[in-house]
Amino acid sequence: MAYFDSKARTFLRGQACREFGTWAEGRGVRLDPVQPAVSSSIAFARHAFGAELAPLAGSEAKSSGGDRRPNILFITADDMSFNMLGCTGSNLPGISPNLDRLASEGLLIDHCHVATPICGPSRAAWITGTWPHHNGTMGHYNQPPQWFGKSPITTSLPEMLRSEAGYYTGVICKNPTPTRWDYEANELQTGLGRDPSKYEEITKEFIETAIQQDKPFFLHANSMDPHEYWAGHQYETKAWIDAMMGGREYRTYPNGKPYPDPDITYSKDQVPVPACWPDNDAIREDIRPYYASVRRLDQTVGAILRALKAAGQEQNTLIVFVSDHGIGRAFAKWSLYPLGTRTPMIVKWPGVVEPGRRDHESVVSAIDVAPTFLEAAGVEVPEFMDARSIMNIIRDTGRGEKRDMVFTCFNYMNNYPEQDAKFPTYTRDLPDKFDNYRPMRAIHSTRYTYVWNGWADGKHQIPLEMSASQTIRKILRATGHEDRAEFEAYRAREEFYDTMNDPGCLVNLIDEPALAHQIDEFRRELLKIMERTNDHETPNYRSDFRASPPAAPAQ
Ligand SMILES: [Ca+2]
View (cartoon, rainbow, N blue to C red):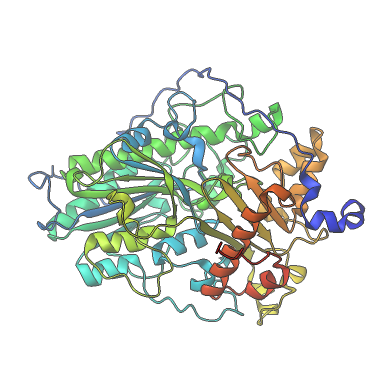
């Protein structure tokens, strides 16, 4: 691209995106007519395991094992950005009543980031409490890559809870670890992770079994909403559903799908447009069905919580909710901007967490759930974990170590086997050879985001796979935002944003003299974390590193 070749120096310092204006977010509030709800009692919706469940009673306020160790219910969304819920700022009517209620009954942490904005690696990170470059799961397909070798992490959260604390462990959809679970329900048993009634039935059966075995439980319940294809999206076709169902026969709801449609949908005039994209009809039409899928996620969360309550386990269960990363579009999923890595973290723990708390100050990582759950269960946190327990934040003790900044990273989208086989040794020029390797690292505080794009040189682009077939890029080009489209494709080597005043990360402040001190602080923090965690990209970042040493303390 001649434009960037001729401006290589300023491009690398990030000036190329300074000219972007600020786009107002849409604030429409008109509600579409509510679609008729599909009854969960339709013929095929018997739970996947046959027998009807007996009512569960008599164990309120203690774990199913009869001791004081809490049950742990870890509920996750798939591809949901931070500010999509009522409790995190959305004004869409009816978008998230169940998650809003959960937040009002517990603690909402505002500044939580996932380890990496891609599904499998984000989940592998939180279930092991380790960063992707430590556990080796850095993308999809071949993981770890051949050059990485064997993962040094040989156990995970469910295994430790099971073997060291006697927990009954279960996972619903998107199993993030090959280690053994006592109970598994896959996506085919849950209507591709999109049928709330299935989650209710499976959760009931799981808890009943834990009670029968007289054990506390750990349930990792993963919705596949609001992952693509979104509810009512043009690509949510029968052919796609058939492929997702693995070519098997399946029973359908009246809508012809193995899962119900959300009970609310939204018009394009209603939906908010995240600030990183222009607010125009093409963007609105594209993301409109996403919000219906968020609504169905909320229905699934409500169904899981109903099952917990019906089982009499609500009072002694620690519940945590997070998303695995943001919406599947450019500048979000596959990117280290807050729209890609920031998630609400909701924690409910009756008798421990004061209802209705909102924590605006703490900075946490989604990987911190692993040591936190271990601590709740009375299991010693192993040394290999990069994560740190946030029990002090949950208990609001005012003591203990806290993060001021949190690390996020990106490595691969798809590490295709044929390409992986070609590169058995890691070399610095891997991004030149393999367009699915796009190393990025970032540091976030409550106010700022610093991003290092180790691959960005004005020549290499974000590939097709890492941008939802370049949907946003195409819309940007078609609607007069060519510069923004170019930036989406090429990025800058370093980026720095004031996310409080520029939530869409539209104005790169990396060369802002007034912020030089803060920027250097972020650079030093990033280098420190990369060095401490043996990040394979450390030599590359070090060669770009340009922070001045910290000022000597005043005499
Ligand atoms: Ca995901």
